[in-house]
Image 1 (tube, helix red, strand yellow):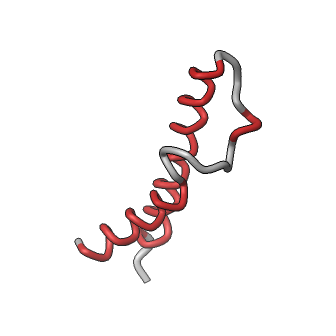
Image 2: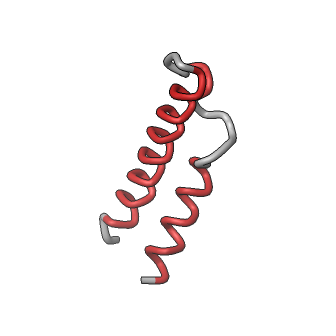
Image 3: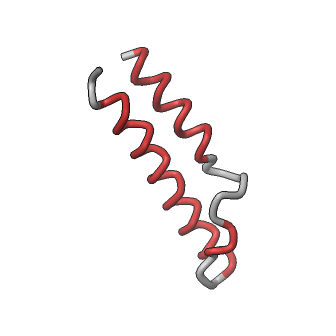
Length: 58
């Protein structure tokens, strides 16, 4: 199994989670640790699924 199939979804999840934290912190004007893991944009689950689908397509 190619390592890209494990690393790509993880990096997509990490990127989406980081962006969500930054956006929610800017909106609340304080660190938004309480909103980590909730829905919204960018969605962590959709980032994982779309990155895996794109990896398979390529």
